[in-house]
Amino acid sequence: MVSPRPGWVLVVPLLLLWVSGGGTAQLVVNVRNRGGDVTQESIMADTEQDIITLEFQKSDGTLVTMVIDFKSEVQIFKALILGEMERGQSQYQVICQITKFTKNEFISSDAMSKLRQKNPGTIRNAEDDKGQEHLVMDMGVDLDKSAAISRHIYNICAEAGAATYTREVDLKYLAKGNNKTLTTLLQATRRLSPSRAVRCMDSSDWLKPCTCQLEICIGWYPCGLKYCRGKDGNGKVINYRCGIKTCRKCRQFDYHVKQKQLCVWDEMWQ
Image 1: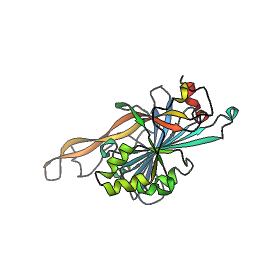
Image 2: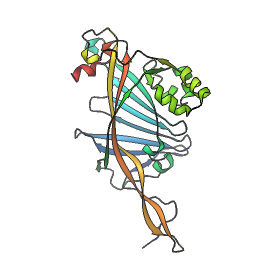
Image 3: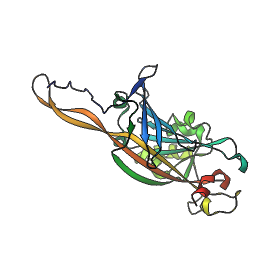
Image 4: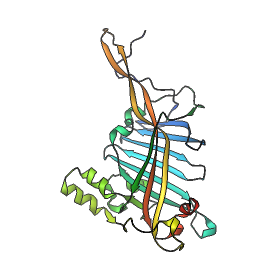
C-alpha cells in the first residue's frame, strides 16, 4: 500500500474548477435539499483573503449567498428575493444577515481549495443534518461603519442598505470581553424595535411595521475533515486527512421591517 504524504488530502469525489487569480478556486456541486429538489451550489475558496463564498439559487428564484470571513470570525448571509410586481414591490429586494462564525463549523479556506471530484454529475446528500437555528436579529448595521465587523460586509451587502442585520449577542462574542472593541462594534449598528412586535404573517396591514421571518437553508457544505491512519516513508504511523464530513443546516432569521409588503413570503406560510 502506498503511504500518504504528510498534509496530502484525499477528499470525497468533488469537481474542482480553478478560477483565474492567485489563491482562488471554485467548486460546483449538485445538492438534494430537504424537499427533494436538486440545486447547484457554487463554493469559492479565496485563500489569500481567507474567505469562502457559497452561492445557490432556490426554486422560487431567490439567490442565496453565504460568505465566511475566517479572519473576522463572521458569516454573512445575503438573500436576493424577487419582488411581486402586483403588490407594488420593486423587481427584487436584498437582505443581509450577519452572525458570528465558529471555526469548527466549516473547513478552512485552504482545505476547501483542495477539494476535487471525479463524478461532477453526482447528486450530493449531506451526511449530518444540523437542524434549524432560530436567530432574532435585534441590531441594524450601518454599512458605512461595517468594516468594524468585517471589511467584506460593505461590498457584499451594498444593495441591502438598511436591510442589513446582526445580533448584539454576536457583537459581544466578537469583542471577546474587550469593552473598547465592543463599543466600536456597537457604533456600527443601531438597535431595532423589540422582538415582541407583531409577526408579519399575523398582521393585516401591508403598510405597518412587523417582524419578518426568513429561512435560509444550506443543503450541503464541508463541515469537517476526516482522518485516516497510515505510515510515512520511514514506516512511522501517522494520522492524515483523507476526506470530509458534510452537513446541512437551516437558519430562521427574525428581523424588523418597516412594512409587511417587504415580507410577502410570511403570508404564504400562514
